[in-house]
Amino acid sequence: MQEIGHWINGQHVAGTSGRTADVMNPATGEVQGKVALATTAELDAAVAAAAEAQKGWAATNPQRRARVMMKFGALINEHMDELGELVSREHGKTLPDGRGDVQRGLEVVEVCMGGPALLKGEFTDDGGPGIDLYSMRQPLGVVAGITPFNFPAMIPLWKMAPALTCGNAMILKPSERCPSTSLRLAELLKEAGLPDGVLQVVNGDKESVDAILDNETVQAVGFVGSTPIAQYIYGRAANNGKRAQCFGGAKNHMIIMPDADMDKAADALVGAGFGAAGERCMAISVAVPVGKETADTLREKLIPRIEKLKVGPYTAGDDVDYGPVITAQAKDRILGLIDSGVDQGAELVVDGRGFELQGYENGYFVGPSFFDNVTPDMEIYKEEIFGPVLSQVRADSYEEALKLTMDNPYGNGTAIFTADGDTARDFAHRVNVGMVGINFPIPVPLSYHTFGGWKKSAFGDLNQYGPDAFRFYTKTKTVTARWFSGIKDGAAFNFKAMD
Ligand code: NAD
Image (cartoon, rainbow, N blue to C red; front, side, top):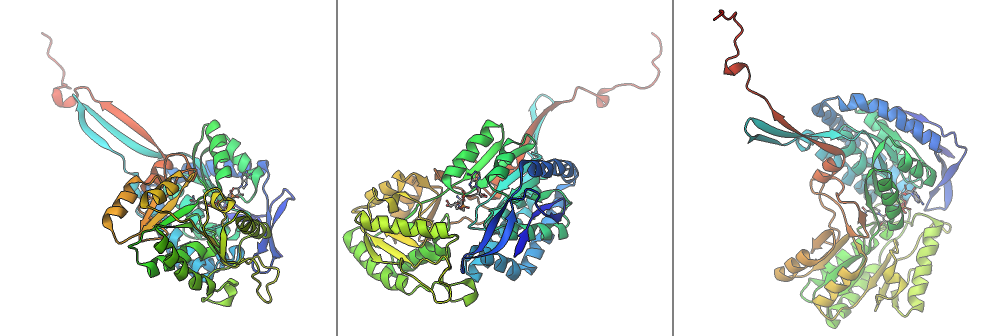
């Protein structure tokens, strides 16, 4: 049984609370580790030490901080397979997906290697007579990252890399379900040259999160997780005077126009709907074909693709399409939602409920499910299922499909498949969703753009990573300077003769 503690002041320390959470192996249902859950006192001590360490780090010039990111990036590449496996071991996703999780985080580290360019201030020469204005971006101090289970490498990297590059110290509170990757990343950052105390990984649950939100030294909170918790954290952090960006859940729609390439649309839906067992905030969970013929054709193309998906543990090799869901509770919840879809009149075309895998009977596997004729009043439409379940909602027109997408309370990602540039352009312009794909099902922007949803998918006004992250993790100071006429205008230093 692995004992998982915290990473404080550059070393592993055991927890002192006596409280732990089980870290499961989702493929077998066995407990594989016990992670310590920090007390408020432990969290406060980690923050106090971080505040001390931050002073020297902030005084380290940006180029040198960026060099730590260069070394860190090299070390992540060197340890890619190991980190990918660490992700898969606790999360359950396939090995290629585990490495993908690391890769999409690494790309943010790569942008941070050029961080000094994003930290430059602005300058106005002669804004008034003899007056210049300049602004500088200064670190906030100690900031916090609170991250979800579903991307154990990527999201901690999205938080820590920009925050540290800006000269802050960070308290990272990873998901208690998948804590080990963050601890390994902290070791690699130390090896890359990050001073002790600048990154503290504090494991915990609600108690440590609340301690972060109430700690007066913590200046900003970057959260990713479910919508109710995002909203709670945003409110409490803001109430305590902190800067907060809180990213929440999703219900991502993909519109399929009659002129779309149906094979490509079906392939895209299967990958985006069932990849990582549907446990992605950018998963497509709702397909919206426009017109009866489109819907019927799409359905016929989807069924064989979904039925042939291979579900299994990450250890079974690279041809597994997706693994188990994260917990027994998540599995029960997903199965319950599928039951509700049947009860409420949706047509369950592919039924994943009875799925079993020999030798893994206690694992949290859910077979792929596909519903047709789903309507917006059903639970399976209203809830973020966060499992391998795709719903098809039929629309009669483009306007109806667009309205459905826009009326949904979530606004993380969306996509349209069409051969018509005019329709695609209209969709991208009008839809009230933060990230839009055109013939592209999971439009996670590259790391030098920024990531963020709208509506109930995000609380706060700046996105994560890219230039927005550099704004979020710094405060702007603007100086207006005037120098009165000086030595160049004839101040005299010789003795004056008496008149
Ligand atoms: P979660 O909200 O349960 O947990 C996220 C974090 O909050 C964890 O660190 C957890 O310890 C903490 N937490 C949980 N309950 C808390 C409480 N009552 N008080 C204080 N802190 C609490 O989310 P999850 O199940 O780990 O992750 C899945 C969710 O995250 C999905 O809804 C998914 O859509 C969302 N997500 C969103 C994005 C995005 O960028 N928008 C990205 C990934 C995941």
